[in-house]
Length: 109
Image 1: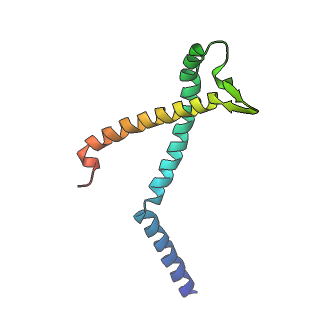
Image 2 (image 1 turned 45 degrees about the vertical axis):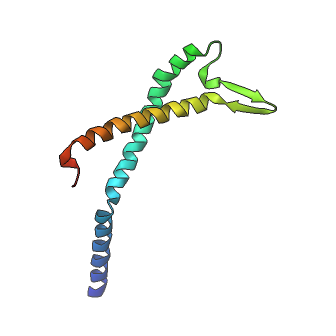
Image 3 (image 1 turned 60 degrees about the vertical axis):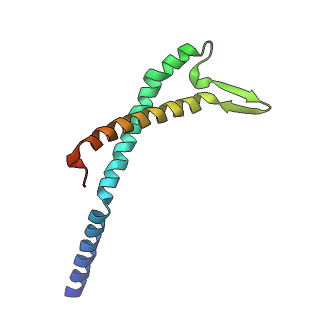
């Protein structure tokens, strides 16, 4: 029974060492924050930027913007929506990373 407890302690210690060494917890937190940010950015694109594009594209809603070639229908509205989301996320990340890199105490030399 003592061997079993020792194995469990070794396993737990090894697991925690792995999590700490490879920053798995930090990465998991980053993924969760990224998903929340994606939801926020999607809402911003749909609530702010899409209406401006709807003003530019007369007579048709931006989300329904498609064109047909032969028998295929191409959904341009969702592509433009995804591109806007991508560029907004890219811009925000650029600004955040530039601010973080300016702080010497956050960078290990």
